[in-house]
Amino acid sequence: MQARTLFISAGHSDADPGAVGNGHTEADIVLEFRDALADALEARGVVFGRDGQQRQNLPLSRAWKLAADHDIALEFHCNAFRKPTATGVETLSWPGDMELGLRLCKAISTTLGINNRGAKGEASGQHSRLAFVSRGGGIIVELFFISNPDDLAAYQRWKLQLAEVLADLLAEEVRHDR
Image (cartoon, rainbow, N blue to C red; front, side):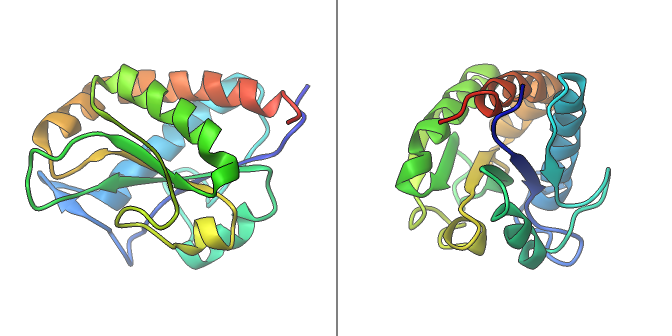
């Protein structure tokens, strides 16, 4: 039985593609991942909200408002840096969500075989102080560095397995009343 509500969001959109790296846009990658995760969650019977239907996401200004109505809210992004050697996964959140952020980072790091940069406060990273965290109470998940060709290759190879791993983690998370 599900004790907590869940919301998943794909950061960025057609109007704001986010970072661009190695022939891909952040918006396309995170939309693809959000949809794969949605499929995996549905297969596990998890009820959740999301920022649009398959292959569609709502503007970020609407996503944080939806996130605020859920117990757990995740928005997926990709990091980028001018040096293509920057690597890893990290989360940005309020202190109360750091524990879940750490578990997400570990699962992503292990599945993709990339560095675990850890769970950080909302004032860290390029997506800091976004309304999704500050107003929506959600967690920003920086899946990997789109500017790093090795990170991107690992994501491309393991993205479906990653969706399954995170669906397992989130299914367990929503079934526990914390």
